[in-house]
Length: 289
Length: 332
Image (cartoon, rainbow over all chains, first blue to last red; front, side, top):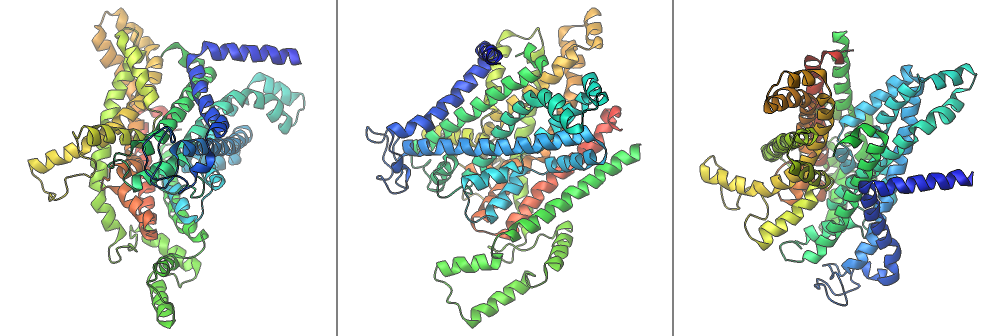
C-alpha cells in the first residue's frame, strides 16, 4: 500500500517536472502561499490596520512598499490580504465543485426527468451573468465577510462543473464494466462510488481549478467595486480604496500596483495549472502549443 | 421535431427572464429594512432628519408611492408586470428620472466601446489561433501567441489600471478617463469623433489585449480538429495553394463555432463592461450601475442588472435560433 503510494507520488512528481506549465503555475501559487504563511514572521501584520502608520509615504527602509491613504502599510496589507483571497477562492471552489459534481453525477447517471430538471436549471443559470446576481446580493448584504462572499460566489460556480461531469457520466454509464457491475447486482450507490467516481476524479480536479479561478475573479470584481469585506484588508478592496482616493492621478503607485501584481501572479498561476490539468484530462490538446 | 426545439428554447428564454426578474425582486427584500428606510437612515446619519409625526407621514407617502405598502404578492406581480413591460421604475437618487431613460442614455457608450473591441479581438484572436494550429505557420507565431494566452488570465480592468498609469499619467499621451473631454458638447462632427476615439483607445486596448488569447485558444482547438478532416487532405493532394487551403478550407470551417461564441460574447458585452467602465470613468451601463450601488439606488441597481441579464438571454436565444441553420444536426 505505502509502496504504491510512493510509486504514484514519484510518477506525479516526474509528471510535474516534465510539464513546464504546471511547474511554473505551481511555483507561482506556492510563492503566494508562502507570502501569506511566512510573511507574518517578518512583517508586523498589525500595520495592516487603518491609521497604524503615517499616510501616503513612498517606499522606504521602514515601509518597503510604502503606506496607503488610510494609514496602512502596503506590504502588511499584502501579507494579510493574499491568504484571504486564496481562502475565499478555495472555499468557493470546493463548495462549487462538490455541488456541481454531485448534481452532474445524479443527472448523468439517473437520466430521465431528474436529468431534465437539473440540466434545465444548469442551462438557465449559465445564461445569467454571475456578476449581475452577485452585485444585487452584495449590495443587499450589509456586512460582508470573506466566508459570506465565498458562499455567495459558490452558489454561482457549480454550473460548469455540473455540465462537464454530466457529459462524462453519460458516456461512462454505457461502459461495459458499468454494465457488468449492474449485472453483478451492485446497487446504484456502489456503482456511482466505486465504478464511476474514480473515473471522473481527474475531471473534477480540473474543474475545481477552473471554479477556484472563476471564484477569485468574481470576488476580486466585487471587491474592486467596493462590495467586498469591510473589516479584513483584501487585495481587491485595496484597489477600490486606491481608486476612490485617486491614488493613480496623485502618483501613489505603491498603493495600487503591488496588489495588482500579486493578483496577476495569482491569476496567471491558476491559468497555467488549469491549462496543464486540461491537457492531462484531454490529451488531444497536448499535441500543439 | 423542429417545432419542439424552437419551443423549448423559447420557453427557456422566458424562464430566464422571469427568473431574473424574480431574483431581482426577492434578493433585495431578504435584507433587513427597505429602500425608504435605507434613505432615511442615511439622512439621519447626516443629521438631516429629526423624526416625529411629519417624518412618519412623509415615509408613508413615499412607501405608497413606490408601492411598498401593498402585500408582498401584489408587489411581486406588479413588479413582474412592470418589468416585463420594461417599466423599470424611478431612480431614487435622481427621483423623477426613469431607470430605463438612464439606461438608454448610457447604452450607446457601452455598445460602442465594448462591441468594437470585442469584434477586434475576435478577428485577431481567431487568426492567431488558426495560425498556431497550422503546421506551416511562421515559427514566431508559435512563441508569440502563448503570451496572449497568459495575458487572457489577467482581468482587463487590472491591466487597464496599469495602462492608464503608463500612457496617461506618466507619458501623458492619452486622457485619464471619460468618454470625451469635459467641456465639449457631444455632437456629430469630426473633432468630437476624434476626441471620443482618443478616449476609447486605452479601455479598448486593455480589453483587446486580455481577450485575444481567449479567441486564439478556442480557434486553435477547432482548427486542430478541422485539419484532420479528409477534405483537407484532398485539397492538399489536389495541389491547391497553401493560402487557399488555410483561408478557404481550414479557417472557414473552423470559424463556425467561433461565431457562436462571438454572438454570446456580444450579448455579455453589457455585463462585462461594469469594471472597465469604473476604471476608466466611462459613462456607460457599468458606470451607471457603479454609481447606483454607491448611492444605494435600489431601483436603478435592479433595473440595470435586469437589463444585463436580458441582453445575455436575448443573444443566447438568437444563437440558439440561428444555430440549426448552420448545423442541422443540432435539432434533435
